[in-house]
Length: 305
Image (cartoon, rainbow, N blue to C red; front, side):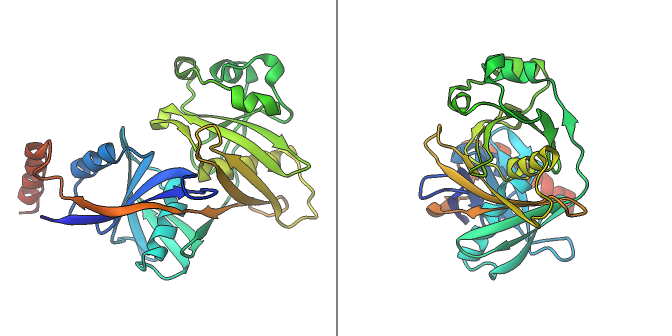
């Protein structure tokens, strides 16, 4: 029986048990999409990454990413945890790593404790009406905070709703309202300029994540939000923090920078990925659903022949 090594890490965890739970399954090249989905559904973490040999020039590793709802084309959210896990396990050397997810390459710097992800380029920023976002978060007009209400980010645009400090904890997402207003995600946050800290919550039912304890992509989006807000151009890299996951009991800290005068705009997100558990997974063949898995393997063999 084939066994697959895996570990679960807390991406951006402030300590053990914090951050966004991510499962990393190593040497997964013998697994097909149906088997990967079977494993991800049973590991029951926000995302499961399957590590594969790279096929793109310059990439150090390739991933396929699954939530409990199916495969996701976005590898940025999990890239930090995957890079740290690969270096910590000795599968990659510390330093520059390049992740391939589909056709996209993501460059990071990683060691066995933390990783830094950078993104740059001209970013579209779309102003939003605050009313439907407040309604979706179960908040009143008086809960609106300072700063613009925007859709921003690198890749998919995240819907950013600044609120007063007390409203972060009291937000209660209405998924039906989000669906009505075409909102796959909603980031509710309070910005404290004196502390350079955003206290945030991310609701992402459109990505099969009810609430995420930490998200690199939202860190990048908040960097775009800050650049739109206006920052001192004398600072080559404006440092800020995001505190997230408190309401879920999985506290996370994202250490970020935005270069307000850079052309193109550049944002970095860094953090730790503490290991929570490690073990081995049995090949799904022989478990529940084995007939479907065996059929998928037979079809792959027939196609190869």
